[in-house]
Length: 495
Ligand SMILES: [Ca+2]
Ligand SMILES: [Ca+2]
Image 1 (cartoon, helix red, strand yellow):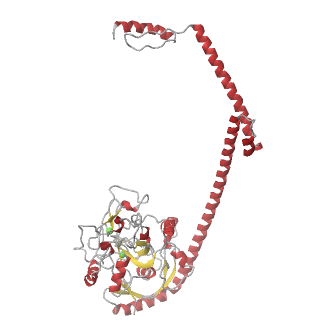
Image 2: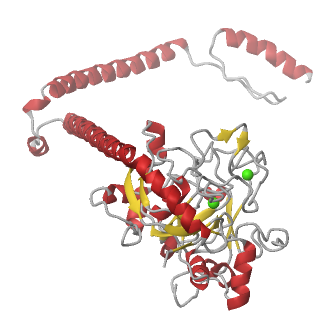
Image 3: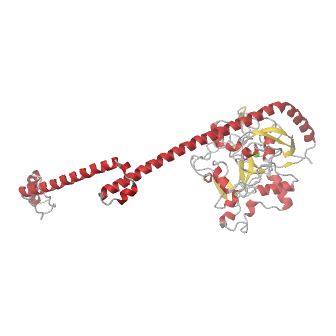
């Protein structure tokens, strides 16, 4: 800073005190601009103030007019206003806007009223549905109570006779009546597992059932004898799915992958912990590079409904119906929560291979196994059937529909075979399944949505997330998507 600037700054101090200064730029050549004469300033100010005052007065007049017009809005019609050529256009537009806002408020109020009425009706329907479920359950329980003692005597006698001559690895499941579905009517349970309701009485004929899930060793025998290739090995045929993208046709299976961090499994897709893995097959269930050398006594996995059917046919057996499967799992213990009773653990021990840990980010093997367990790792149920809870899901013969029990109880019959037709895409969308252990069909191949019943839950059933290792639990096997936690067991008729 040089001397000139310093002198100039002292002048500026004086001018600033008069509040009439235009600041120069701080450089040697800066010039001071002198203020206009005081009389001229006064004139300019008063003209400005006058204009402002007049504008404010005009605005106030318009506002008062508008207020009056809006207060009398009901005296006007929209058409009348639009035709009025004498009215101030500003007032007219404001009135038209006010009219629209009023109509909008009225529409909203009507909508709210309709919604409230629908909700009340919905609640009414739900309550009458719950009443019906309670009545159906009460009637079923009353009948079971009456016949249980006599039926048990017959069941025990039949089992003793039939098991004596059963084929190796099979046990007799006596025919009879049982309480199918869930009797847990607590709101949370009903909401998450609505497909298990209403609990009702079902009667099936007797049959033989594999005591265990079909093992890798058994499946290997079948493949050796027949040269059969599973869907996971061969993939889908382009001619069957002309619209599908090439990546939707390749062979493989869904493989579980832990998430990197803790997540809320309820929010978002199950694909966060599932991965469709090309090269995952029954021989490589965790994907390319894995094998089953040390797992020949584990259940076969990464198979689908057709693979299971092919095996069953070769073995001279068939897949169980959903009704048969639950009859077998319950083993004559009516209304219990688990296949072994009502408590999840017995003497502090896990009774099935399920999931422990924070699903799906961390997994513990408190029950001994992270993935599949060898068959017969846990105690059998009362009729000698192993792993009817957990380990792997077991494919049944029936088509899956979540509302099937509601349909069935209207026309109950012996030996139910499930819905006549597969679930449609529209029904599936309406059903909107809670993200469970199976992800949505991969890609955009809606043709993959045929669902068959799967029962029993798997090593991925977590009591925090998916309590589907209960005998009442129902889930689906998506027929063209094999997965690492799904297998099957077979049944056989007496003759
Ligand atoms: Ca486990
Ligand atoms: Ca199982």
